[in-house]
Length: 292
Image (tube, rainbow, N blue to C red; front, side, top):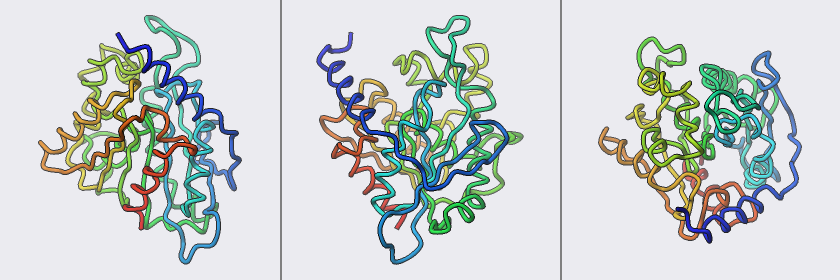
């Protein structure tokens, strides 16, 4: 049973992260025809000596419909105030309604969630050139929180997807790196721990599709990538516990790749995207080290 004090702390951290008013983007562009096929762009604040690195932000929320990009707009603005150009990506998520054998909204859509992230990543250089000319797409870093951390790792690993995958790239994407924040990075461990009510299995379409689809979706199976990767994780995270991040880092090491892991003491799940929290500054620094 989870410590009641830990639950109380997590609720307070979540309330702080969600208390910030939404920040409107400087521009919005569509990468497809669905209403969720949009990217919000945030221009770097203040004067910059050069064109600013582009941070692609993928929001979390267990791939479930009630959680959209709106809740990370204060974080996007925080990064823009640190001198980055930011692209806040929306994508299709699960149904808003419960369905058979699901307690609450189902997580993700197969294959649409992956279709959308792949399409957005492919379209971003062109979209940014028009909507945010301050962005230097040659210095792109992908970041994401929780389920968005999973998608960030996956987006950087498309060139190692199994042959025949519609999302596979012929060569590594043009990225400076990935900074995954409390990511759902190892599906097997996440399911063992019951992360987000079995969201990983739901994303793959349920237990009947687990074995078939896992090699196409699980970051721990898509290694090595050859892309610089860092994971930032709170030690007190009860939403996506640190064992998930540690399992991914161990899988990378087994594949011959080193993934940086920053564990933050007395930090849970939500301070990583809370501009009022010290952990958010740590995240910005991790991105800076890759981007600049």
